[in-house]
Amino acid sequence: NAGVTQTPKFQVLKTGQSMTLQCAQDMNHNSMYWYRQDPGMGLRLIYYSASEGTTDKGEVPNGYNVSRLNKREFSLRLESAAPSQTSVYFCAGKTKDRGTDTQYFGPGTRLTVL
Amino acid sequence: SQKIEQNSEALNIQEGKTATLTCNYTNYSPAYLQWYRQDPGRGPVFLLLIRENEKEKRKERLKVTFDTTLKQSLFHITASQPADSATYLCAQSSSNTGKLIFGQGTTLQVKP
Image (cartoon, rainbow over all chains, first blue to last red; front, side, top):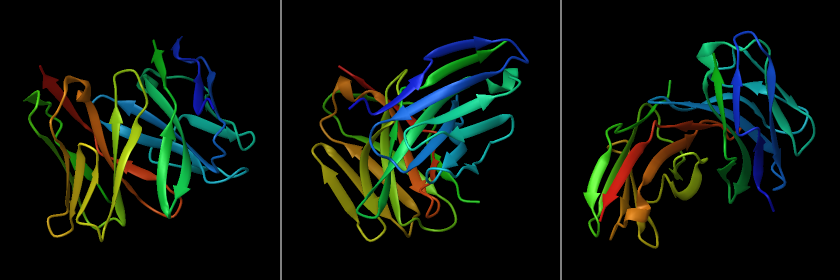
């Protein structure tokens, strides 16, 4: 099993450009999440998908859109990138184990917006 | 709103000593708290979970405590090794959707 995979690993964009971060999992997770991580800020939830076909906003959704393409894939789109979106982005899937929520993270995408 | 607070200052200890990391939460007591490890350039990895009604949970050299009176969880690594050097994140589930609220993490450096 590959677990949770993300592409690309690194990306540099110019202000105003658009791009889609891809995430796929082969762990049969129902729920998937997108976080951003900035120095001193910890992980902040951007969007999540509790199940296939549903998506909801997290703590910092402005400037982003998501698509839960199917159970395996959950993509994050930046329509018009801004320097404030320079960050490391993590995708995660969730397994409910004995009534608790353990998340499994991908390796991250490091995005720089110039 | 609920917050998770961890000491943002790095913790430096000598190999063989016990490392103790602190996680404090505000407002309501979560049903459980989770601890994750994050190495540079990698995603967080789940380590341990402790429920509200559990005082202590152990896994090999790791021990987690949960004190609802102090609104605090402590994470201990006994007989620490340089390989334990990483950032450790505390998290709680915020709702039935499985969303997690993370602390900012504490970086541990174990020196040989």
